Image (tube, rainbow, N blue to C red):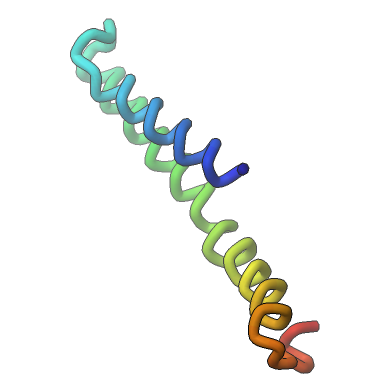
Length: 73
């Protein structure tokens, strides 16, 4: 559920920043896009290095029946 909310928010924020109907100057639009990219990086790092490995460890054992031993701990 959280991943779906993140994807929806990324999609909507990107659409608003890139929209020509918004009243953003070019300088403000560039600043907002830079801040948006920084936010994406700040969100991606924990997902890549914490959530995905943890989900893999928690799901791998019960699905395959293979014990992960100390790696699973």
